[in-house]
Length: 414
Image (tube, rainbow, N blue to C red):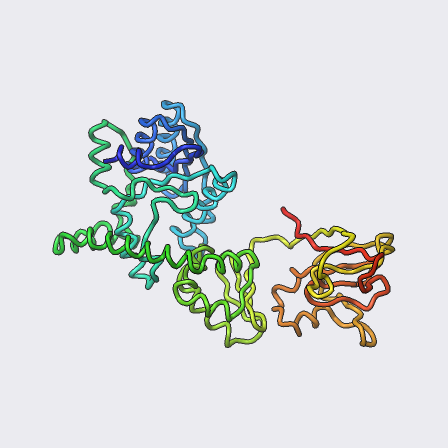
């Protein structure tokens, strides 16, 4: 069964990174990939949580890779990250691991991470998500092939894996913390699920079928709502009308795409009725309320940087405000683009004096937390353009004619 599940996957043109803890599941997957002559590298994370046992796990994986001539990457998770006050140890460990996965998959569309989850893990996930009040996407569990993550063992059981290991005389490491019921997953694994399946022998099969049906329904929703969700993620903002249009399932799908938990949904629902600049904060992402929309910002993101380019002609710029019509002489001036500063002012047509850019953005419904991310064009110390919001009453800014040049904004790629 193990070999059949490996063989049914299309491994061609894939650069594989196997997450290997040294436990039986990942060691069997290591052996199965090797037996199929599939090239792969190994990632091992030492969380430094179990003292010498953690170091022995690392050494075991190092020896395994060395003996089989498999490339290995080892990372040590800082203990101050997992053991910081107010932090959930398991969540922090998972986040550290996921960032490493994302670094690998970001290298190209051919880079895949291979994980050794099996259908007993799937069953545990169902009960955990149900306990936490999760929606359809949580209850549906994991996918065999989702994005650039592969889980070839989801169709087989822990018992199948153990039998394979014994028949092939494999060695592995036992994580003693798995026997502790201090963690909720272990409590389900060691006590609650065995008790339930003893009383209801076909419970596991029934839940796995239910999860499969949920995944099909979720896939259908992704197809229907996927385009709007892609647009929201690309723009990093959504209107309240778009949020309502997504519906409950689409909203949960958006949060899932952002790697956020279900509770965030209720908090975003509440933003509509709160004052301007209200916010919902998760560990890495902030949602900030504008007048009629919500802005999404990665809290770890550095301040945005901008560039511009000049064009001799562009269609429809006067209506779209996507480009600025200028006199060619402006190129002789000192022109640059940067983020808004609280003291910035702009001279607007029909106004005496200059208006605070900060106040202007507030009047447009931009929350305080997002204003510094808005670009402005400065020429000789004067703000001449706030793309998408305002154009100044400046002699270099003009209506289109034969001598006009156009300036367009480009966000720098970091």
